[in-house]
Image (cartoon, rainbow, N blue to C red):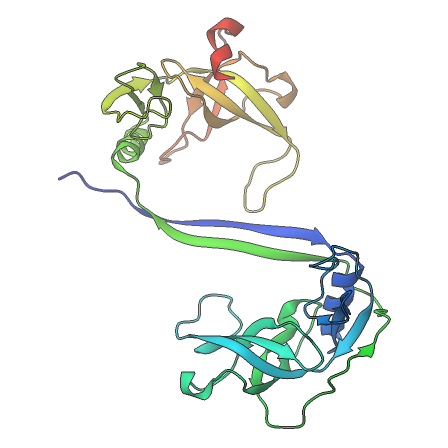
Length: 315
């Protein structure tokens, strides 16, 4: 039986966004231990606040301050907290309607077990010791048996010293990838510095990387074909923004490369030539780093450029 490859993979990137006046006031307020909502056209108060009325689509700007106490409207127990979740011990995800608000806020509830949580229970905010102007300034909710906050929120001008104007929200996905039959063969060939694709039995096109089926005909593919190693740049882009954790100086070129014998272009970095001299039709070959399972980059072969008609269908 052929060994099946598998590997843990992580997709991670920081999502950076600017804030409008409503979200800026909301997050800055959390830093100052103040919860702000926005009054909708029908008079109800929305927490978290939104910039446009969900019914009329009118712009909303009337900010109000609501209480830090509220009522659980629904909940779900989380017995196995994951990395970077609000609490490191089992907790409940809860929707909490803060006193004075008409909508509910999603966050964590610190409770000893699921038997201690119920719809309608009273809770209050537990503030983080260090606050920066983010939803994590609310460390979690905790059970509360004190007095209820006011039902009528008070007007707030949304003005704070040093307001938060932007946030960086990290996005990350951890998973284990197990390739199918076609990808398994492709990756094993790469480990031997070879590139293989699969030919469609109907249209006879060779697809690299192979997918196990022809995307045009919808027919399963099985015939392996070795392609390359040389190829032709069909199109490219110049990268001017340095990626986190990628030790490549900008600017550099990332290109679509049609390997000789393939009917589908794959991606690769172009090096060994000034970035402003990379062009469509440039003939390139792979460069392998020691111990690498895939080409580090492609470099010019010194051959004359390919004629446009030989790769125009792959642009």
